[in-house]
Structures are given as C-alpha cells and as structure tokens.
Amino acid sequence: MRRAVLSLIVISLVVAAVADPEPKTVRTRIADGFDQPVGPPDAEGYYMSRGFRPNGHLGEDWNGIGGGNTDIGKPIYSTAHGLVVLARDVRLGWGNVVIIRHVYLEGGQLKMVDSLYGHLDRIMVREGQQITRGQQIGTMGSNRGMYLAHLHFEIRKNIAIGMNRSQFKRDYSNYYSPTDFIRTRRKLPGGGRSAPVPIDTYDKTREFSQPTDDSRGRAVSTLGRAVAPKASPTPSPRKTFRVERFGTMDAF
Image (cartoon, rainbow, N blue to C red):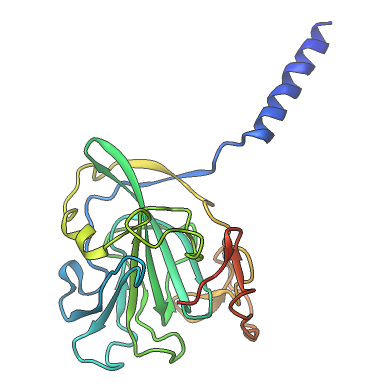
C-alpha cells in the first residue's frame, strides 16, 4: 500500500512538471550601466543617421563620420553586461545578428531588456556566452553589400520578439528608443552581483541559413565548435521564411 501511494505521488509530480515546466534560466551579471555600442561610451566618431520611430524604424542606425563604407569592419561593442541569446546569420535584410539579454536594477526592481546588433560583418561571440559592458561582439557590416555599412541597434523591453517583429506591436509597449534608454541609465546599482534571466524565450532554431563565424573567420556551430563551411542556400520567399514559432519574419 505504501509503495502504491509513493508511486502515485511520483507520477503526479512528473505529470505536473510536464504540464507546467519551469522556464530555463541562466545567471548573468547585473548591468551597472549602459553605453553606446559604437565609439563607447558616447558614440565618439559616429553619428545617428536614422533614429527610432514607433510603427516605423524600431531602432537606430549608426554610421562613422567618414561616411560611405569607411566604417566597415569597425568594432561593435556590447552596451552592457549580459548573456548572448542569439548570434547567427539570419539572412534577408538582417544578415549577421547578435542579441544580448541584460538584467538591471531600477527602482528597487530587476528588469530585463534585449539589445540587438544587426548587419554585422563578423560575429565574434557565441550563443550562451557571458558578455561584459564594452566587450567587442562583432564588426560593422553592410549585409553583403545590401546597404552602406552601418549598425542597426535596437533595445527591446519584450524579450519574446527574437527575429520576428511582425507579431508584436511596433511601439513603446515592446521597444525603447535606444539613445533615450541609455542616456537615463548610464550608471546603475547592482554592479558585481548576478541574477537569473530566462533563456529560450523564442524559437531561434528554424531555417537559419548557416552557422555564424567566429573571430578567426571559421564557421562555428551554436555550441562553439568549429565546423566545415558550407554553401549558403537560396533565401526563402518573404512570406514563408520562418525563423521562430511566432510567425513569418518581416523584411527589415
């Protein structure tokens, strides 16, 4: 009888765990402040060529003051301490993209944002890597010549967006104006401490074209192991190119 009761308890616990699994979390260092991702801390040598506009341009475009492609290959830095949750070539209008998750203390509460760095020429970090404020994460690019070299930079308050913006409101309910956000959070409390952040808040495994490149130009898997390069497949049409469970990816 006792064994039967224990078996029922174990089965109930297993069923409960399957029905309501705990979200995966990883501890990361609390951000002690935020800097600009180019020419930190104040974007020295760069200018904002295109700003944030709700229901329009959902980030900022940063260019070197030399104009044209004079800034291609220049370093891009993490705006704050955090954890890399995406580092891949997602093709289309994005190219190489890095997303870093940050946790910070404000008003006595822990809050989270994702920072996105798009059109990179080279990715120099891997998914799951812990990143410090001002650490180089890649280099300025042009998405294979689609644009003049620049950085597209976003700060998202909704950490479920991932690489598909079409299923989310394109306004301040999901996004911050990056420079406004940074300007009011240059120095924050909590430095030296860590806190858990959820991971896998969006499905980043579908139909990415190829592994990312590491700092030495080798193709690498998402686990950071070097693999042989392979030819890039032809990009899928806009309406069918799925990159996560939320829907189709909108053109950038």
